[in-house]
Amino acid sequence: MARKELTEKQFMVQRFSKTALRALHILGITGAGGGILLGVPQEQWLTYWIMAMATGSALMLWEVVRDWRWLIQLKGVLTLVKIGLLALFIPLANYKPELLISIVLLSVIVSHGPSGLRHYSIVHRRRIGGKKEVKG
Image (cartoon, rainbow, N blue to C red; front, side, top):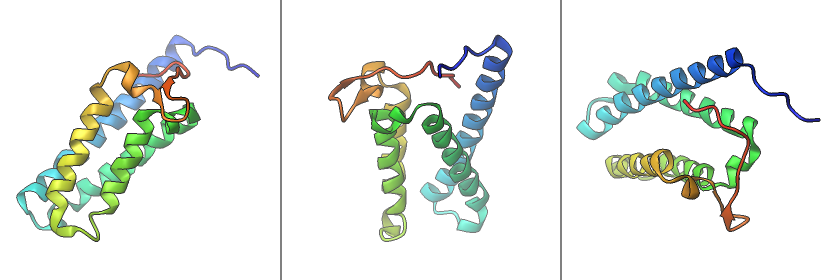
C-alpha cells in the first residue's frame, strides 16, 4: 500500500519537530562534551549527557521508522559506529576526550558530507535513494 503525500501542514510539523529534536541533541552534546573535554565532574554535565542520549536515540528511531534503508546507508552505518565509540567510554574511560572528538568528527561527515557519501549503501556498493527526507 503506497503512502499518501504529506500535506504542507504535516510536513511543517514534522520538520519543526525534527529541528527541535536536533537542537536539543546539539545542546546535550555541547554540554556533555564540554564537561568531558574540560574534566568537569560528571554530576555537573550528566543532565546534558542524558539529553544527548535520549534525543540521539529518538533521532535514530525517527530515521529507521521512516526508512529502514538508513541502516545500510553510510549515514546510518557511521551513526552505529559512533554508538560503538560511545560504548568504549566504559572500558577506555581515560580516552573519553579522544573518543568524543572522533564522534564529533564522524558527526560532521554524516551531517555535512556530500549526498553520494551519505546515501552510499554498504550492501549495494552504490548510492541508493530513500524516501523523501524531512530535513531538520
